[in-house]
Length: 164
Image (tube, rainbow, N blue to C red; front, side, top):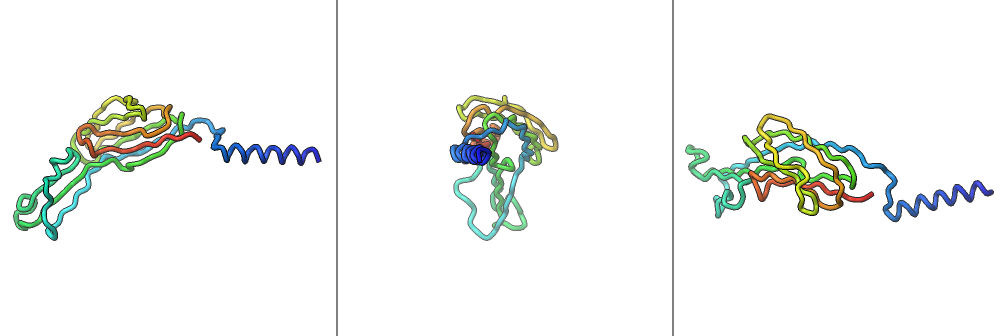
């Protein structure tokens, strides 16, 4: 009978800890494969955008009608640089490795900011066709931001850090 009480007490304790969000797991080593890509789209079915998207962000591209395809004077193209994936999550205390590969764009100046705004990965250059590895420890909870300074303010990715 006593062993049943001990087992019941252990089960109740485990349920309470789970319900309270308390984690007993140790920090992990987490690796994300992140590509720096450019997506493009062209059309001749709708009017060209105003204003020129390149005036909104260095992360946007625009080739106007007549310039994109001289054979088709109404066709225009837009483009945007991005990180893929654009959102990731880790647990506070995890060691994070970002394995970054430049697919498009000759050069990207990249840094990583912590939730408090401090820089946890100093700026480094990612070139097309090359892989780079950087890392940090997610010692804060909140929103870490990967920023491409070359194509800001729109080329960013998010890493969300939470407690267990």
